[in-house]
Structures are given as C-alpha cells and as structure tokens.
Image 1 (cartoon, rainbow, N blue to C red):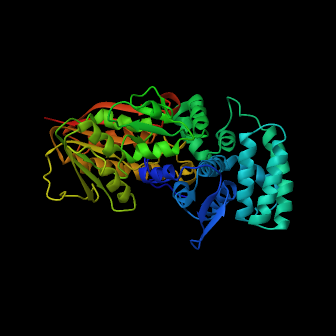
Image 2 (cartoon, rainbow, N blue to C red; image 1 turned 90 degrees about the vertical axis):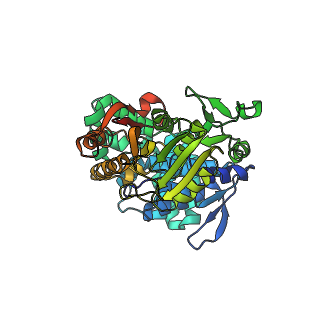
Image 3 (cartoon, helix red, strand yellow; image 1 turned 120 degrees about the horizontal axis):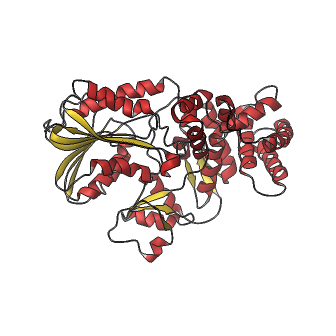
Length: 460
C-alpha cells in the first residue's frame, strides 16, 4: 500500500453528520458487500470483512470505513476494532508467522488480527479464553470448520506469546521497536536519525493510541449547558474533545453550523496566516475544506478562493463552503495550482494571502490515519518534497507585494518542512520572499496532531 493524500482527521463533516443522525443504541449495523447487498451483523464480523478488503486491496482504511452503515454505538465499536487491528498489524502478524507454517487465507488472518488486538487491548480475567471462543465462532461463520480449529490453536498460543512480550529497552534496535510498536523498520530508522531514541519512542507510543474526536466551536455565542455536556474543554481556545455517546447532539450542532469536527493541530496554519476582514485569500489545496471554513470564520467579510484538483474530495469542499459566513464571498475552483495561469479571470499579484496546505506523507497524523505507515515507501518523502516546492512556486505569483504565504503539512519530517521552505527560497520564485516564522508541532510534545507550518512574506 502506497501513500496518498487522505482526508483531514475528522474534518469530513458529511460523514460525521450521517453518523450523528443515525443515533440510537444497540450494536446492529449494515454492511454493503462486494455485490452492494446490505447485510445485518454486529460490529465484530463487519470489522473482519473490512480487514479482508484492507489486506487484499489497496484501499485506504478510512475509505473502507465509509462503506459501512451503522446504528448507534456499533460504528464506534467497528472502527475501534478495525483501526486497532491495523494499528497493531505488524506486532500481531510477526507472532502469527511463528505459529503457522503457511500464512492462512485472508479472512482467517483477519480473525487472528482482531483477536490479537483484543488480547493486546486487555480486559480482565479469562480474556484469552473469551477471545479464543469468540474467534472460533466467528471463523466458522466467515471461513470453515477446519479453519476454526486452526484459529483455536493459534489464538491460544498467540495469547501466551503476546503476554510474554515486554516493551523494548532503551537501547532497542529499530527492528525491535518496529516490531513491538508495529511500524516499518525503515521508518523507525529514519525517525531515530531525526528525533533520537527518546523522541522516536514517544512518537511510536503516540501513534499506537486511539485518537479522541475534537470539535472546533463556531458559535454563535458560547456553548449552551446542553452542549457542554458533550464538549470537554481543552488548552486550545475554541477546541473541545467530543465525549462519546452524544452523536445525536453532535449531529444537531453540525447541522446548525455550531461546531466542526477538526483536530487542534489544524489551527496552526490558520493562526499563522492570520486572515483579516475584507482580505482576498486563496486556499490553494483546499479540499475537503476544513481550513477554508476556519479562515472564513476569522475573516467574517472578504473573498476566499478555494482551489484544489478535481476529485471526490471536491464534494466535501463544496458542502463546507456552504457554511461560510454570509459576508465572505467563497468561490470553489477545480484546478492545479502548479499549472494555473489564471483563476477564472482573477489577476495574479492581487491577493493578500495564500495558504498552501500541501499533500504530504502524513507522518504527523498517524494516530488518525492508522494505515499510512503501511502505505509509505522511502521514496515518497522526496516525491512529496518536489511537489511541495512546485506548489509554493505556483502560489507565489498570486500574492501582491507584502502578501503572506503560509506553507503547511501534517508531516513531522524535516525534508517536507524546513527542507522544502529552503528549496523554495533558493529558487527564482522565492527570491522575493523572506521567512518570518517556522513552527513544527511534534505530537508527543504538542498534545495534538503533528504539523509543520511556515510563514513567508513577499517583499514590499
């Protein structure tokens, strides 16, 4: 699986709104199978079927989850199991490989992955027996009786092997860290060179934890007493943790435009750009539109051009732009910033600010994007960096003298952050710019998703 740009964590309002409106209780959900036939099931076998597709096809985990329709807490349980198995895939698979001579077929491997995650997660006395019994029962439904006997034997030994494991010591190798924390060895080696042993371990531990859902408050006014029942304050202004079990209330708040589901890490680029009333601003890599909406909220009045390449994410961008304040003239344009010589008749050199929230390797948001680490390849960093420089060069020509250019990524890698900024400033299009500020938010330090942000200003 290779790297590709995926939606901002929890910024896809359409999906969140659908989830919220379903509400209700219980664990029953519906799943569209390969023939688009809706079947009834509970969360566990649905998670297993998602894992089968994830293992067999090059489909992103978040895209697979979008195919599932659930009622009440079933979706949360399904996502928890599905993402947990992917998050711990490397560790579980390494143990299974020592227990079976030949790799089992995919649907049996999916059962073992889910059982392994439940064992890692823990849950009281008799857990191994409960997990094993359930895994056997599910294998009989998903596979066969003979494979259920294999699962029975493997899960029992898997429980023993996982229980015997201990956290690697301070002088652990990249391979030891990679296996235990389920990350590719080459990526751990890269991080050890950049962050050192302590920082790398902190990042690995961070990535292995489920991410909370955050909401950005949009107003008007302050949250009501009812809303504060499910909005938990954080250290970041206007950002809250969404407490579980309140999806109907969240749905109503989303529909009313009072909240937007968005990690606090996304605020950094908007704060550094500092949008002002009556300005003309371009969001150059806008889809799905979370940062466009945040900029418009700060502007109140002015003009916002939301530009991005054609694709499915344009639907979410269009939907988000319907929520901008009435005083902001928002225009959505499909196009490539690197090749756009005109933007529907707009004149280069006339914009106050441009945000380039560039596609990247997503190394700062792996807690949300759980399968990114399995798609990444070493060459992806250089490929992204080349494209990121081109995006900055394309953005530069739209700014007027004194205009602000903010470059942001959700990567913690220096090659995609300071390296790209330096390369841009060395080029012909960057000669008229100066770097005013640069921030890299390391998730284990910042307490939210990682990000790299730089503010450049065009010479007056």
